[in-house]
Length: 196
Image (cartoon, rainbow, N blue to C red):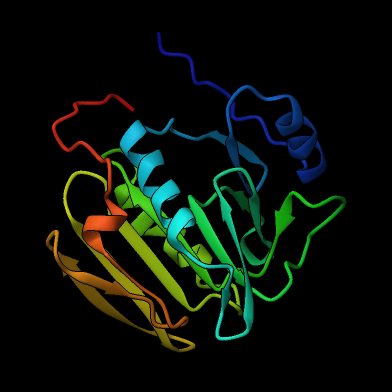
């Protein structure tokens, strides 16, 4: 006889309280707490390379760059998550108490893994699109020199650019900045077989 596991629902306050003492990061969606898949060294290296190379001031405009540990709150979907990298233009806008939850990314970057790429391309992108400040979504493959770049054209229209190859130059649309894929993937070892 099969027994069905009952789903437990939490308030956002309880989730944030539990997240403070959690060993691993968790997403929150409509009352459910969902464990996040662990990263790999290649995944971490790509995030680090972007953050290291991205200047905080471009053309006299200030940017903040956050990697993995800062939560994003999407009120329309009652959703907390931890994007791999977020770029904010100007000052961060916080949600709730403290400085752990922000609401105004300009650019969101996700490094794709085999287990999360469908989610990152599907529901997660749909949730992200509810943010009025969000203009650019970058999906970076950790297994090859490949980037998908989604650029907001209007409220319901996004264009898609593909970048493939070690010597290709990747250009952001919402910020005047570029990087070669060779530099973005510096010290990434495609030969490694890593479990997530």
